[in-house]
Image 1 (cartoon, protein in one colour):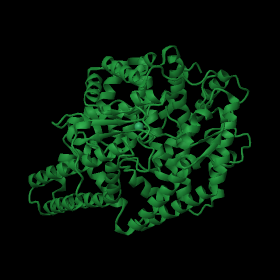
Image 2 (cartoon, rainbow, N blue to C red; image 1 turned 60 degrees about the horizontal axis):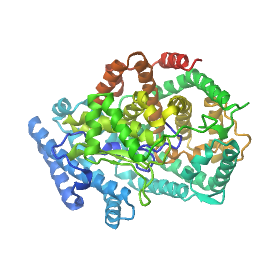
Image 3 (cartoon, protein in one colour; image 1 turned 180 degrees about the vertical axis):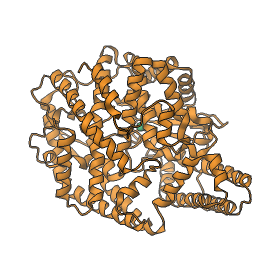
Image 4 (cartoon, rainbow, N blue to C red; image 1 turned 180 degrees about the horizontal axis):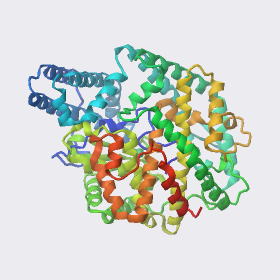
Length: 587
Ligand code: ZN
């Protein structure tokens, strides 16, 4: 399920936990709580990395270089694991003073450590023995290094710090929202249930309160975004780019496709997918018994409310274990491993950080899933979506090439979004007699997401190609795009939303430029699996397993073709998907 305030492994300011992931299946399997922790000493680690960088420069043979690289892997794994353990333990209990201090230490030290890692990579990239290493770790790894090197240098550090300060300001402002509603003061996420309440009059009041809040901060949000656009544009110029689109693509590590490819994808979304999505909204309109869908009906699927899972959080986890036991031997092994080693922290607690993500501990070969169960269908998404990410980490754990863990987000989200569909046959276990409703909602919601997500991407490209646009002009761009991508949408003249303000609540637009289209690309690949599994579940699963194992050893397009998937940038991409999904929905 993909709310537009998507939080899976991507909600925060630093969404890319994935870069810290490595799939080496270590020998030290143990429960998370027993894993020892020791702070990464900056001086010591810096010395090690500098020495390794020197060794790379002086290596006389390929074998020698490869041996140095093995040493680097160990330094990297130890460093990343310590940081990840501290991070998880801090999130698990934000009142714990020890890990709070550790977190503060890393907030300051991490950029410096990553700069040292970049120095090592640069030496490797420029090594005369590069072709030997290319044989060992692959061409993709070097394309990724190329992007990393061209993404930043010393000249933009000041601007990057300012960029960080601006996104922090945005996040703090959004997190501090206190919306008066029904005698309570609610933050944005606590407003969510009211925005989708089954009672339309409750929804109407909730959306009004929501809009009133945004009107009070809208100028401030414009100001922050304006500064961000100008800052990022200045960074792009300093790095020799015309505008931020190019630099943004490098920072997303787009190593095998460019903006023309994405433009072609967006064109197809507009021409083929939008008319289809509009028909699917019609199904929902009729089901809700409305003459016209309004913005207050967004993400509302049933008159008696959206389906929620039954059972305690413990029971949901247990049902998950039964489901993965039946699905395949590989998923059984994975889930048992997660349970035995206590690698889930999913039950809500007072001092626990909000949100959810999946991360990975290299030396232990252990994925870790962090979430906050809250009694909605989101709990099941943790078991399907986040477990899709974790399963991929687990099965590709035998890959000794650390760079293969640098999977890009449009690939990573295929693993998770497709697992949401592969687990469909077991949904009765979670939703009982409303499992049919859940499946309908899941599919319709995924379809609803595609135009919205694509629009977020076009908005950003327009903004960064025209950095001189005023805040008012940016709103006009958003309003125009809403008409193209979601023509049914009716804001009923709401003073905030009808004036092109909705994007201000989409945190990725502020925090992670150009990230959003990755979800959309992945969603459409998950649709390919959805169509495939209904024809032949076994074959589709075989392909999915192969995809998970491929990791980042191949470029995106090559990898998709190898497992029998179509590439989203090609003409005619949506025809089969739309035809088959239409058939399924009786359109
Ligand atoms: Zn995800």
